[in-house]
Length: 458
Image 1: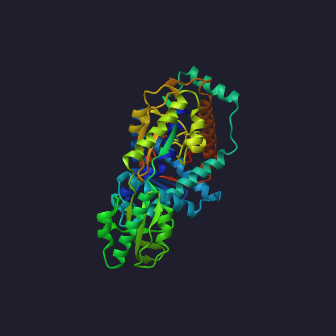
Image 2: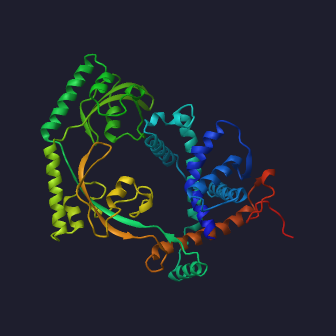
Image 3: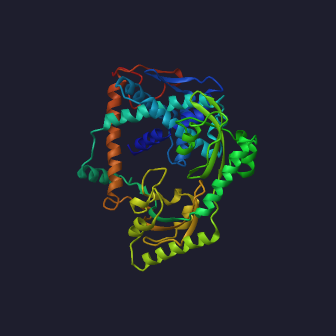
């Protein structure tokens, strides 16, 4: 059962990425063979091999699975998707489209390119074609997740069930090993430019605006003056929609302009901008901008560092707790109101696996003991915000075999996951009988745990 849980959890996580990143691109090159049909949903021959390889790579070879086992897990996903439609599970186009936009921007960040160019990395003719495929895959993934949630919504585990589950694993020598984990909190002080420097930048942009209005090229002005690294890509032009992942201020200004018009300077988290609108294409706007960031003198940076060092000294001397200092002094929008606790962007949790951390962060905190604080250090966001930070090691646990007392919450989650998968397994056995299933000749010899072949018992 532990193996089944791991496989199902893996498929749930990677259903989107493998089908899209690998599967869709492969399907554009050749027509693939159909391995199985479940309801109106199909599994291609290539999907099975891709999922199997991805599982083996992700688990570093610890999980091995045959083609037949992989096919059965994929068939279960298609069964869930099929009955989600029958059960009238609602997934709105708006939320799918929002997820598509987030995916596009994630891919763009991975490649370090403009979101408008992402389709070129995956073999699509244009961005609209790529978004159409993303929409289909994301919608199916959401349907599957919500159907699973519907099937298991009332399931819970009692403390006694957790104890029985734990002892069962212990008796079989199958207690899981939990990796070293840490919880971190930070205190951040920003180094802000002076009022005079902000005014200098605004006046410079006003001068550039006038020169463009007098006939100068915004592209040339951007190449000379702009601090946007994308200024040389796509002739410095951006296509903007109201749902695209541009900052709010940029979108609002772009949609307020007439063709050819140049905006007044405006501020965002990136600095100060002016925008010129080039085209209106229905719900799209094509625009260029000049971005300039105010400079912060070294003496201002030094003063900010000294201020944070003073705060750290007060924490070390016990004059104020770290949490009190965060609430009083920290200027980080995301962590100021939660005691400075950092959230793992990949898991959404407040703990980090030491072996899977950002290398720069790992280098700063890996040798800290619980309760220790880093030296004051400089950091800078991709938007250009400059700051100084300190980070405290709130909690630290080393790699260890699961303990019922120390790891109760994690063991409880595993027990709940097992119970939910058992419920889904029971549900699937009931639903297979009244669902159309067609298995290709290539997989007729497979032996499945469930009666996908609709064979009559002797």
